[in-house]
Length: 192
Image (tube, rainbow, N blue to C red; front, top):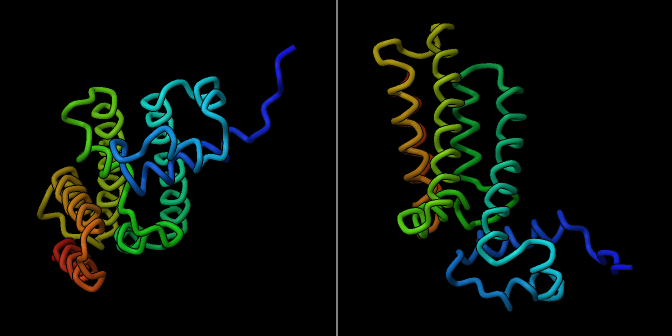
């Protein structure tokens, strides 16, 4: 009879996600993971496979976590502008005071050029965000809140690019005031 697991898989997966999010893939060793997750190396392999497979699972975990948080907030927005503001503010202010930027962006910039699976996961996440943003922009255009001078898909591409830039800047010493100025400029652009 095999031993039963002595840990909650979701809890230790979240711990691995946080470590990869903070340090990146390359800088995170198996020893770091075992220590941070609080499990034995054998349990890591038995439950999650190798480091790369665990990393891919943490990307999925992160994407689900952020997607759920963003969608709940967007659903409660009274206007399209409020929804866009929330997305910006969520990206700028972070998730539960974690100053590590965005795991998806961090993974794309660190690994996408040399890891096909990471590239596919990050590209899919970026496209989902872009579609969500296009829906919000379309809603704002239909309600008269946003200008119809530009196609909603084009605006969502520019908005996504702006948000990606902000998420990269979050890993630097850029001030939040600067990032909010970028947000305000983009919101003004939508209104014209």
